Image 1 (spheres, rainbow, N blue to C red):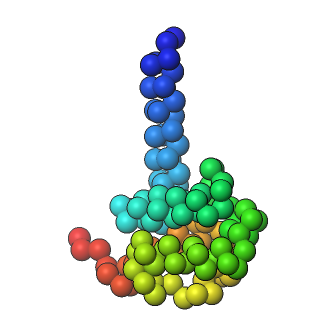
Image 2 (cartoon, helix red, strand yellow):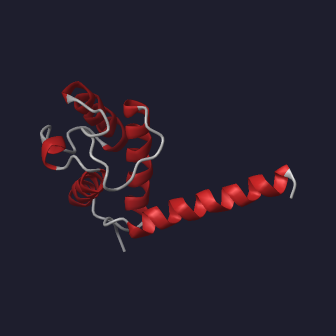
Image 3 (cartoon, rainbow, N blue to C red):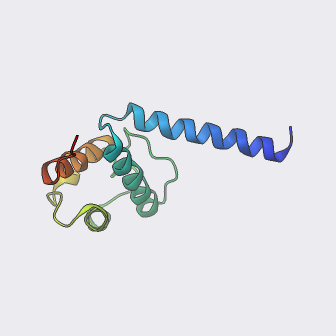
Length: 114
């Protein structure tokens, strides 16, 4: 097998893993997938962690109160200012819980049209 085939196989595995992670997430749909991808990127940048699992806790991964403030600022820039209460990180510090909170807040702010 040559390098091009190896890279293609790796891309297929990564795409499948990302799709499965989004499909298994408690928040579902296109908006939820966007929330998951954006939140994952924010956590990866702030926490310097490459793999984020839905059960991961912000504080267990090295986050602190200053990091939480930075994260909420990034979420505000990404999805809209004042979307979440400032103390949400203490009640929804797991990745899945925070993604659901963001999705729910977005649904309340701007429900999806069907």
